[in-house]
Length: 517
Image 1 (cartoon, rainbow, N blue to C red):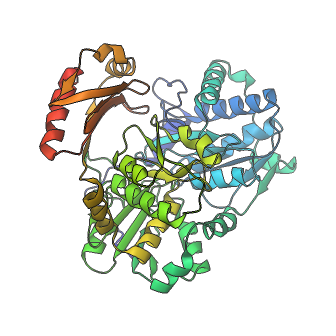
Image 2 (image 1 turned 30 degrees about the horizontal axis):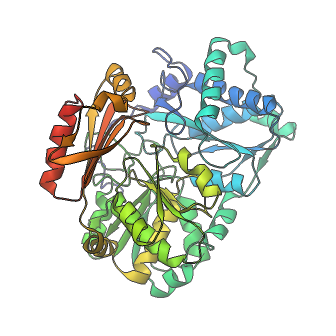
């Protein structure tokens, strides 16, 4: 097991009592409900409080009645400080509106909400989570009958209704969990068995068991813990070692991230340091991690250390193309900021590329329609057609372990792809900013950069303005967009020429757009 004290010095001090008080009695101005790429998030208190949870749940209840949506809503959350409380609030509001509710005895991973909807046990879900954000944050996600993140039409409807309800709280109905049970509106289900049985249809557990690689698995204090335990037991994976079973809503056992915050990000070298150390020590050849709501993955190997999510996506895409030769899927899906190495892999296999705005909600229809061999985003999210319509960090970790068991180290496999398709030089820079600048960047259109013909010696070949501004060059590209949840501008750049070319594009491209790095 990982030493529980390994990440304790230094720690980010969290006043649990104060945060609980802030949730019920916010001391500052209460922010309006605003859905980002997936749900409403904010710091406990004015950013996310009891009123937000009640208003969103009532807005969902009203929408279900208005749209004549019948059937139970799965309600749950991750392992955060107020997740269970938020789940109970949502359940009480839904039950007061005579909507049946499903709950579970364990915290529920985001992809499991999706699975339950796709398998028909629930018609929708409310999920209390703020993903890998710091423990002071809380959030709430709504997934409709597609099983994936709600599209903009639905989230706008919920936002508008919830914000109106926050001003007119008399319209919010609520009963207790005990009253919901008395009315026969609340049922507890086993969410583990269904999910791990479905995993066996897409993961080769027999090969993983036979080759028996030493694998370290870290749930990062999140919802994946009982699911990984069930996988280990059901499929007899002897060397599949869960190296941390700590559940602590302060997440103080997670090493601080680059900015001194506790952030349970499985793609960051700081929170992942204990796992990187394990593979470097030789005790394990593979290490995998999922964030608290298990929709993101992390991977470290003996040969490569921490694997960049872009690199892992490329290896997974190449493998799935070969593994599923009879698959009718015709595309690899990627978001605007994800590596174009996927384009080269797709072209070599005779597949197309479906480039979407940032946010997994844009892949939902394609997953359901059997479109994608793989769809992914550079922030360590992925799924595929025939699987969940949400990002799935558990599936990704197990798929990477399957690939290593069959074909070798993930880092070595990625290097083989670069020999075939060329080396990618990639960076993403997060730039602190303000709301005014974010709005200005979001409003940029292709016409605003019409005078930009070359950058760092490469001709501009295309401009896309659907989510920030993306400039396509002959052998490179760059993108600037505003974060949907933080006061940050994200500047992405990739070149297939050289590291120097990438640096030149970052400098010249940011200057051309008026962005100060």
